[in-house]
Image (tube, rainbow, N blue to C red; front, side):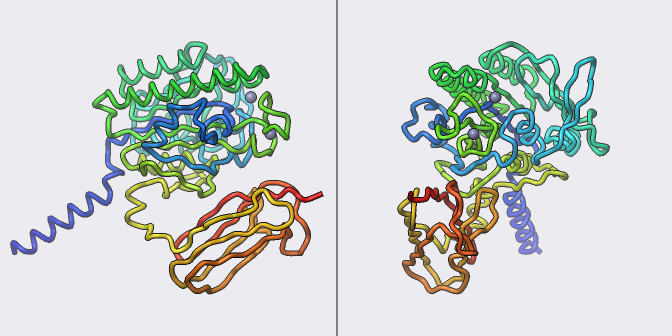
Length: 405
Ligand SMILES: [Zn+2]
Ligand SMILES: [Zn+2]
């Protein structure tokens, strides 16, 4: 009898620890920096303009291949970040102002409905804007579950100050902070102003993280995610003053995550996309983003890493030359015999060339790609990805093809 009780007790302990990061009391702070190009943030390994975010990245996780995979402008990318999906938006007049609402429900609505949380538990803080973009009127969610919009001040500093006030006075479990100045200064076309705004936003991310660490309500219970709605043109497509197309500069953005359940000092190279952010945040908060299309980025969670990710069988040693003009060689190692598929994909993830698909023995391997697709035709110049899938894992990385003249 005693023996049986003991086993039950151990089982309860086990179950509790398995679900520990889904417990009540988990808090989240999501920071959006509008229009910062990856090459000036965590894509710049000299750490010149974002020293604070680099410092935080050392204690958390950064995703090196995070992309806006839809429209690279704010009015569509921000709703996509909220909704965990590329949602349609509809023009409307709300409280006397022309604005838009999103068709799909937002993470705010999922959160408040699933948690039965009052409006004061979910804040959206941004500068003063007359006609705010609205979440959804979805029949299952809608205005009853919108966040408390707190639209005050003019600058990112004002917004951060307001966020600190709200944290101190209301202690919401869910805080969304939107910094607009980087995009604005980027459009000025003045490099020093753009860089100055990035440095400010970076320091404000540091201020928010420090505030979390010094408040017992938030400390050790809060996950912070920092990302962008879009980047800016790379220098081959018009440069930093504009954005809005599909160039790598516009698409490539940062995703920084830190918190009690997030891996420390970890860089993930798996491709991830705008809709994955809110779905991952939903996983942290243990809510169901029922109509979202993104995926939870399970690779960033420490618990998952221990439980599900056995040591990867395949590792990529090099891809060279990269960029390439006629031929590039992918070298990889298999630690065990495994089924392997190695494919080249275009930007949207569509496979365009199968290099390997079959059983392989353990050892060092290599395969080359000559820039042709499955029909033997040369592909267009641009950014491609390889994906190497083995029994238990997938690894991916970027290959740039620039045809030799
Ligand atoms: Zn803009
Ligand atoms: Zn562009």
